[in-house]
Length: 98
Length: 313
Ligand SMILES: [Fe+2]
Ligand SMILES: [Fe+2]
Image (cartoon, rainbow over all chains, first blue to last red):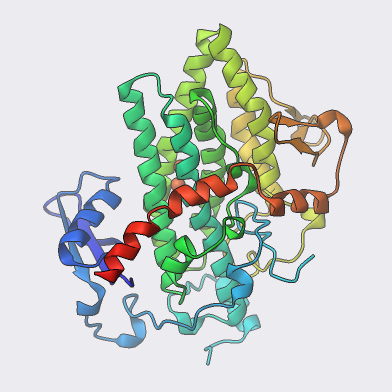
């Protein structure tokens, strides 16, 4: 179940511009609205909206945070290594490490 | 395919360059970033079931609201970090639902059940502070633009978790008697746990690349010191003892016990009297994971059943 990405925009007060504040995954627009509202609840936003990432048309595709060329999935060696993770992520063993 | 060589990229990020797009990364940069985000995401995720166990013990419905609000924040933080990983080509679904418990990369400290209200608020005061220390450093220094933006919200909420912890540690300590003793007992096992998860001391540090790629700014020892700078005075100010003190001569905090040392999981007690152990022994203990590892990961993955039904529809 691959859930599409929605970009979340909001502003704190009427006179402010809408700002890109984050993103969420959702299977449809209605769920996207709910997830965005519940996820980005760190402020009392005056306005919030969600836009499917696929609907955003960058003027310069070479400079757009909304275009994410999916690189091939990373080596299992990272994902399936037994963790020795320090909180900061500095000491995760890669498979094969002692 | 990459625009830069590894050396070029390292130099660029140290001159202030912010990476935004996958084709600006080298293989090394991408792997180091993925490891960092995996640890971050898994830590946020597993803190939820850990906190949930003790939130049930809240002394009033009001306080249960703030405790569960913290859990909700942690799940949102996890979700945001897995989303960032998705943009790096990872499969979020597989990361959350497709891994074995021992493959999750949160610190060993979060493999331990929090069993009462005192342990929950000490977790907020000590572990969430470790979170702020680490993620605050990442926010200030990271060369990866999308992560820096995502951390604005996370840091705001972590500050609230920390305040919640401090306020309750003070309140229970001021009450004295059994309330204060419960804070002391929690600090006794959780303080060394937090000290340990900052990882290898700098003079033994394997080369990780996170500093070279400017994915963080401070070394393990610097982060550990920063954490102690606020944790030790907090505990001392409320009459709670910690096994560390400020050393005038060396101008830094020093630990009053053999570090690292062994931990007795059944008794929830550090075996400080048995002396120092090696870091490879610590890594072995971490790799073996702690007593609640399976239970916490299973409680997250239980949703799989209903996901299957949705997929079949
Ligand atoms: Fe968090
Ligand atoms: Fe937190």
